[in-house]
Amino acid sequence: MNLLLAEVAQATQRLADAGVPSPRNDAEELAAFVHGVKRGALHSVKDSDFDARYWEVIARREQREPLQHITGRAYFRYLELQVGPGVFVPRPETESVVGWAIDAVRAMDVVEPRIVDLCTGSGAIALALAQEVPRSRVHAVELSEEALRWTRKNMADSRVDLRQGDALDAFHDLDGHVDLVISNPPYIPLTEWEYVAPEARDYDPELALFSGEDGLDLIRGIERTAHRLLRPGGVVVIEHADTQGGQVPWIFTEERGWADAADHPDLNRRPRFATARKALP
Image (cartoon, rainbow, N blue to C red; front, top):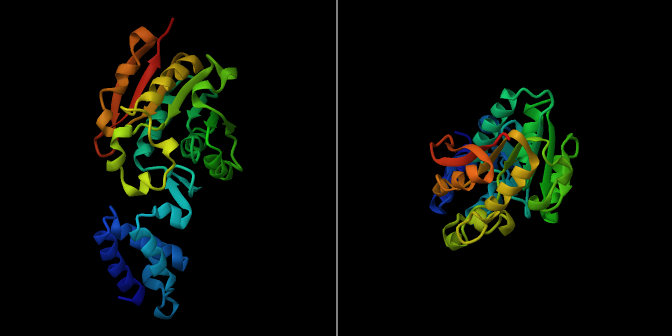
């Protein structure tokens, strides 16, 4: 074992003692970041090249600063995104939401499907859809100017139509012409603040986390926005907390113009997102 791997082992224990959920992964990621190598090449770093700054970033992670804030990057499906203070860090759970949406769009008999991403944040969802559904026309909206600093960086060379504005009042020029609306909105109840992981509670923007007493305030608003934007037969896909399984589909009722409302699990088989189809006339 070389010096770096021995230090990684010590760092793993320190992070575990600090309550970091994935101590080994994070210790290795930070070692690779500081030393400018891939995780699989840590064994190749010479003892003489060990960089003591490694312990500086480990100390930051011990304080529960997000790994992605330290490295400045987040991975989402096939993307590497720039992230930092002011923008929500995309989570692996959302990848299954996007996967479902991609399959749904590909199954549509539409040559150039039009997609809208509400509350785009870092742009992860919109960029993944634009990349994996090449002929799609993707539109995204974000309210926060702080978040948009990161969104614009990530979308600098993309074909996504990015706008600043309120998700509940966006894209009136697209009313009735959208094939799929997707969103990972804030959905944490205000009453759950103290139970939120420090990485999210202390570093993600509150605007991207909390939404009323039951966490569903913005989702209720997005239901109306999605209905306005979608063509008949178009689909909405919306992420929610695993504790909200069963609640969100009831927002998309037949009386409000929806059909086929359903909940879906993530890769851990926890309720993660709801879908519904705009009813035909």
